[in-house]
Image 1 (tube, one colour):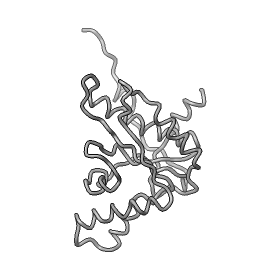
Image 2 (cartoon, rainbow, N blue to C red):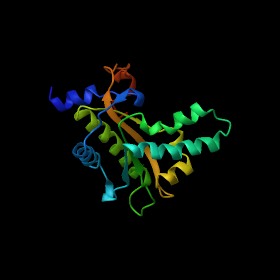
Image 3 (cartoon, one colour):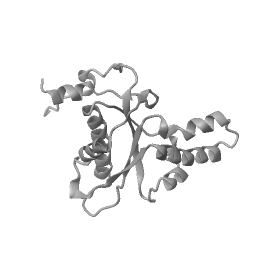
Image 4 (cartoon, helix red, strand yellow):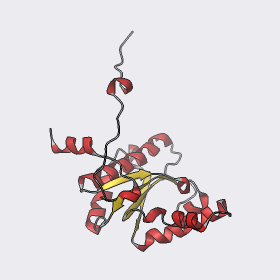
Length: 190
C-alpha cells in the first residue's frame, strides 16, 4: 500500500490536553498552511482564513475566553475561569480555521462552508504527515460573539474549528469505526 494511503488510514484525533511540545517550527507551520489551503474552492473565492495561536498568544486569546466565561457564569469558581483561560494553551500550536462564506451570485454558501471544512481536515492530515497529532474541535467559545470579536472575526465570519497540534504524550488508541456496510450503499436503477 502506498505510504500516503497508510498515512490516511492511521490518522487519529488526540485530545488537546494529551498534546505536548515542541510544536511545529515556523517552516512546518508554513507547510501546514500551504497544504490546508489546497482544497476544493469553487469560484476561487478563498472562503476561509487561518489564525495562528502559539507561545504567549495562546494565553492572550485565553483572556478573551475567560472574560466571556465570567460574563456567562458570574458565579464561576476561580479554577473554572482558569481552565477556560488555558483553553488554547493545551497544545503547543492552535490554528483557527475561519469560514468566510458569504452570499454569492454563483457559488452556494454551503459549498464555501464545506471548503473551510476541507481546509481544516487538510490541516489535520498535514499535521499527521509531519509526525504531529491534532484535534479539530469547536467548543462554546467558537460561537461566543465576544470571543469572536476579540479574535478579530468579522460579523459574517465563523469558526470552522480550532485545530490543536502537538506531539502525542502517549500512543494513541483507535476507536471503533462504523462498518462500511452500515454507511455505504450502491445506487441502483429501479
